[in-house]
Image (cartoon, rainbow, N blue to C red; front, side, top):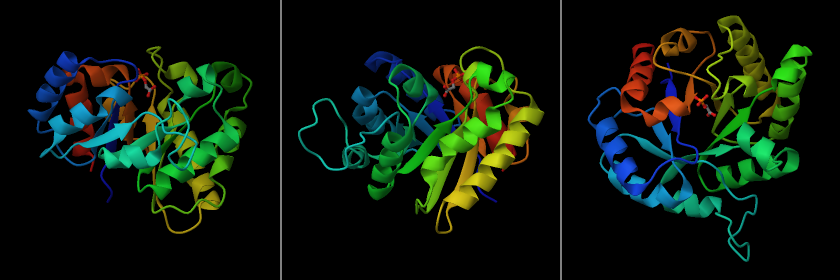
Length: 248
Ligand code: PGA
């Protein structure tokens, strides 16, 4: 059985002192300091947090990657090769905040996925519907459309994170039935679209907390969690990691 994967998404939070304290607390927890746990930290701190994680079992993740494949004259961009070079194992691609605020989507995200895979990173492709789309009964259609960029991609490992936009940072969580339905659909769609025999993990994200982690992680086809707010508090993140470990 594959480990449940827990990724903490720090988003645009952190400073040297805060990061050092949080990582120290996380490393002292045996629930957290194990394989199958990763921290997605802001780009300026990848190197310093990577150094703090040296010798631990946690993995490093980036929150975004350039759509440009090769290094070159692309001011402000960070290539997949650079992320691999500083020790990242994972990279988030197409987080709903980037889709919303930076208009990311479609072909651009496909290119990012391809670049990540070519550099040896495991992409964590984020999908999710808005509240209006859910209320209009269009959620499955929206998710299928977002997954269409995976067509023909050949990768040993693919992680998809289902994060309903209306559940991110809002305290609202999708019901266990809603999560089950979408995760089943995502797995089937990935199997249809990806070539090769990729290991596919589908994470749930959106207001995952210490209190609801066990219930969510117990749902069929939930292979882990992408955790925002609660990943910045060591006690909460530790309880979530513990729930994931119990279920391995
Ligand atoms: P949240 O964020 O846990 O704070 O809702 C999840 C995410 O956006 O990855």
